[in-house]
Image 1 (cartoon, rainbow, N blue to C red):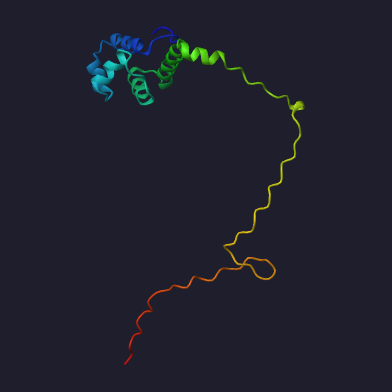
Image 2 (image 1 turned 120 degrees about the vertical axis):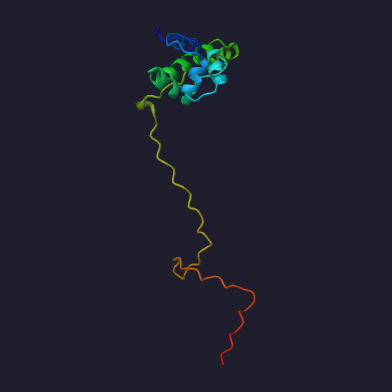
Amino acid sequence: MAKQSNQIPSAVLKSCIDQYGLSPAKVAADISLSQSSIRQLINNKMKISIPIALRLAKYFGKTPEYWIDLQNKYDVAEAAKDSKLSAVLKAISPAKKIEKSAKKAVAPKKADKAPAKKDKPADKKGKAVAAKAPVKRGRKPAASKVK
């Protein structure tokens, strides 16, 4: 197969199908995809997803990364053609690293002490003590009569 860069994934898939003398229906059945999905892939109407890449890799003896890289490179090339995106990219300046010597040594700020939580009562010395179990209010259980 030819070099992978700047290739259209649909054309590569079509080429594989042709090289093996297969039909889209046969490929679809063999890799448990619908014929519609295979036709959409061949017609460049659907992207090669990871699950599809795994299936194609197993079927055609390639790696899943081959198919994913093929799709990703194609997507990047297509995105680079987008004029709106190009305008946005032109306006972005590269980030600048700060040299280690230029960094100011700033001591971490001490966190303000949060007020003590009110949910646990404290003894006279300020230590938390276990809260008493809440008293259940309501109807008293009927006393059993002992004879």
